[in-house]
Length: 559
Image (cartoon, rainbow, N blue to C red; front, top):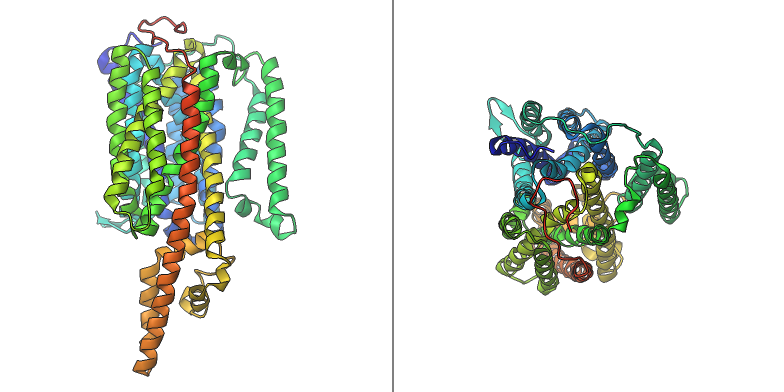
């Protein structure tokens, strides 16, 4: 352990760790604003899902593996490797000559991201006693909150094209910006973080790693962009349902064999004995539910701001500031209070209660709701989420010896990531089904039929017209209307021109009204389920014992 470090040394190490974690958190949001430009340059909309899925897949797989490896070989080499791989992946992503290479380098980025994420929370446990960890876990939570606002703003700003030192930025700079930060973080870690490992003999669990990777990969591919990833098989007559059922079967079988292997392994990646600990078992379920509810509910507020208020991608991110401000404030404050009082259960219960009620209150949002109404709800949701989220890792760390800290902490990140992945995919499917059910067959909509007759809209309507297409069309209302006005201007007769414009405007307004109404109604269902998941998590937390956080440096679990 590194509890003997001076305060100055600890702060330097934590600044380097949080710099690396900031890169990962920033990359999750900054890329969103660049996707449209990436598609335009490479002219490959069908590959859009791969850009996101490749990163998420390798990150999910890497987190638990890196956590266990750090227990064996130490945090320092793993963290340096993670920052190096992520920085290299960012540089190569920005230099990608094609979308295929971009997908490959994004996968490499994801490996680095998984290593950094697993180590950042664990190093807090190496540097500080459980009683001291609260304030630092709170600061880490604030880093995530800050990045969720900075990401869309910086991403939009760079993608729009800025000029300095004779250079013009574009979407590639959303990756290049990671390079200098990554280099500085790596140098600071190399110079200041010693290597401490706990296992004298190493028996890497290769079979367990392979089975866990296969199970996680199957789950991610079954719920995220399955139609895009397996487009070739679908074109050859294999149904999407058959592919998803096969992937789930692979995931279940791999998980069963993984459990069997972990019983036999000398140094298992995820020791099954962890689940004998009541607090750990309950928090595993809570973290899974939290990930699904948080990402599946709050994430869609960005789309609500774009569809209802007509905000741009960067503006929509900026409109989340009340929630992020609440998260940062409560994360930092709660961390201080937990360290002061030495108890975490009351803060988790209070945070989950506030978050549950806030997500439930999102059901009151309507197309004509003023923004301040949403802002107030988001502020309270941020306060609740910021209070509960950072403390979950702290509660798990308090249950285990130092030698198991990497595996235990990374498992929390694993289950949160799985919850987010599955929750987002399920809610996305609900949103799509809800919109199509409300508006009917897209090809029968008068506005869509009119757009099909326009050469300018041919690319927008290429392929199947689904809910995502309808939402994209609604977002581009102003651009489409300008294109239509230019086309109407060529009509010689003023009377015919005015009639055509009036008919088009009426169709567009009706379309926008119907899509926004359907979108809002579908979101209400998502918010209700998200609140329900939060409520189940809240009920589970009540069964946790209200333990005292350890204040000494002994590597023994607290009671």
